[in-house]
Amino acid sequence: MEACLSGKSVLFTNIPNLVIELKESMSANQLNFYKRRFGKYDLVILDELGYVSFDQIGSEILFNLLSNRTTAGSMIITTNLSFDRWEETFKDPMLTAAMVDRLAHRAHVLDLSGPSFRVEDTKKWLN
Image (cartoon, rainbow, N blue to C red; front, side):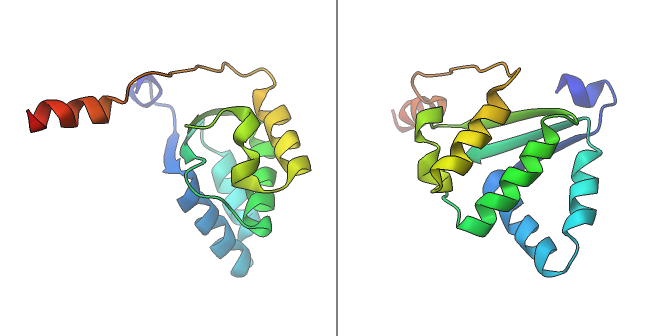
């Protein structure tokens, strides 16, 4: 929120939709244009890593995009999976290890384990 209020350019999207957009851009020969546009944001917030697994092409395109981003700007990535479970999403052990290596380097990792606020709110609503 602070980034938006201070005039920074911010992109918020979920990762499954991002992979769909990347694949569509690749099919339309617009992938480089998409990457350049993606690189112009001051902050990129990517939600829901791990809820959907990706095929090889989706994993490779996402890896390339995020790998380039690690040296070009700030990112926030949300996931319900610990790093040791990311292979469930990317299916390729080497690509997964490289992805974790690049993203975790110089990262601030926050573990927000605990009860789900949505579940708690639903319980309150039902009572």
